[in-house]
Length: 276
Length: 338
Image 1: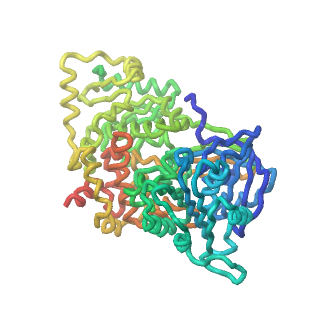
Image 2 (image 1 turned 120 degrees about the vertical axis):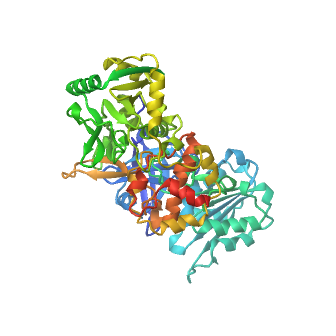
Image 3 (image 1 turned 45 degrees about the vertical axis):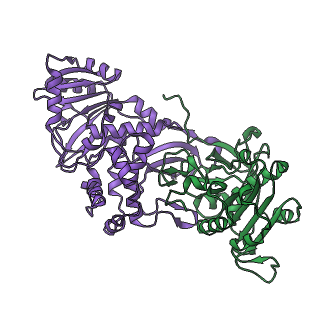
C-alpha cells in the first residue's frame, strides 16, 4: 500500500452555532474534533461535506485568531449547500483543508488597506478585515467598502453597524436598489470610490472580492485612482471540486485556482484571459 | 537499458502461466472489428498486432467510476478511505499510451499525493509494445519524445518469430526473467531499432512539443476556435477516449437502504458544457469555442509548461471519435498556422 493517507478523507467538525443572515445565506460556527484549530490564513477555503449528499468548497469567514473554531456563511445554491441549511446545531460535517492561497497580511504591514466587497464577497473578506482589526497598529488607514444588491442582502449587519461607528475605520456602504427605509447610499459599489478622501495610491493595497461581474468595474475605478496592478489583490470564485489540484474544474487557463488561488495579486493573473 | 529476446511461442506460454497463477492479467483483445483492453482468460485472446484500442489503459488506474470513501449516511465520523485493485500485469501498451500513463503518474504524485491512483499504479507491471500496424490518426512520434520510458517496465518489439525486449526497470527485469527471456544475440539492438522504425506515423504535428507551446502562446483569440466549434456537439467523445485526460467529478451515491453510501469520482471533461459552472449557474466557459481552445491549450501548452511532458501523446483517438470531425489536434494546429 502507498504510505500516504487519502487526500480526500475529511476531518469531523460539529456545528456549534447556526442562524440565517438573509433569506439564502446561513451563518455557521464549526468546531473540529478535540477543539483543534483549522490552521487557516485569511482568504483560504475548505471543503465541507455531508456523507450521502456531497462536498462543496466554502470560504472561511473567521480570522485565524479565533481559536478552537471557525466560521462560514453558506448560500443555499446547490444540493450540498441546501442540505447544510437543513442541519442544526450539534450536527457533524466533514471538513478538508484549509486550501488555497491567502491574503498576504504579513507583507502589508504599514500600508493603507481598502477592502472592496460585493455581496457574499464579504464572507472571505471578513477573515482579512478581522485580522487587520486585531492587528490594528500594524496597518495605516483601513477603508471598508461594501455593496449589497438591496437591504435584504446585507450580511453581518451588526458588524457593519459597529464598523460604521468605529473611528479607526473608514466605512462606506451602498445598496444597488434603494428602499424607503434605507437612509444610506444607493448605487453600485463603484459610486463609493469618489467618497474616499486623500487617497494615497502608492501606499494602499486594495482587496477585491465579489460576484464575477463586479471585478472589471471595480478594477477600472482603482486604476483611475492610480492604483497599480501589483497593489490590487483579488479572490476569484471557481468550483474547486477536489481542492488538491487534480480534478480540473477550477482551472483558469493554466492556473488551478485551488492551488495558485483563490487569492491572486492582479498583476499575476492579468495575462489569464479567462480570469475576470 | 538491457536488450533481451524471447520466441513468440515462449511468450504465449509465459502469459498462459501468468493467467493460471490467478493473478489478474490484462491485455489487448479483439472485439469484432475493434480492439480493447480486457482481462485475459486464456493467452490466445491476447492480440498484440493491433491498430489502436477504443479506450486507453488509463481505466485501470483512473477507473470510469471509483469509490474514494465509504460512510454511514449523515455520520461524518464514519468516513473511511477505500482503495481499488489493479491488474498485476498489463500487456500491449503502445508508446503513446505509455507516455500518457507517465503524465498521469506525474499529476497524481506532484503536490498532494493521490494514494487512490498511486496504490493501483504501484501494483502493476506494464509491458508495452511498439505498433505493428499503422493507425491513420496517430502522431505520437511528434509528441512523446522519451516519456514512454518513464512509465514502461519493458517494451516488446515484434521481430517476426520473436519479440525483442527493451528492459526498462527492475520490475521489467523481473518479469523478463520470469518469462525466461534470453540475453540478446549479437546485432539485436540494430534489429530492434529497425523494427521500431518500420511503422511510421501517417500524420504529424508541424512542431516539436516545446515549439507547440510557444506557437499557441498568442493564439487564444484566433477566429478558428469559434468557427470550428460551431460544429461541436459538446458530446465529450474526444475527452472520453483521451489517454491524458484526468479531470474528474466527485459525487455521493447512497445505497437503497439509505443507511450507507460512497463518495465516488468519475471521469469528467472540459468539453462538456457544464464543466466550468459555479454556484448560481455562472459558467466561466460558456462557449464551445472557449472549451475547444481550453482543451487544445491544456494538451499543447499548459501541461507541457507545467510538467515538461506532453499533454497530448498523439494517439489519434480523439480524431477518430469526434462525431463532427473537428477534434484532430493536428488539423487544428494546421488551421491556426495558416
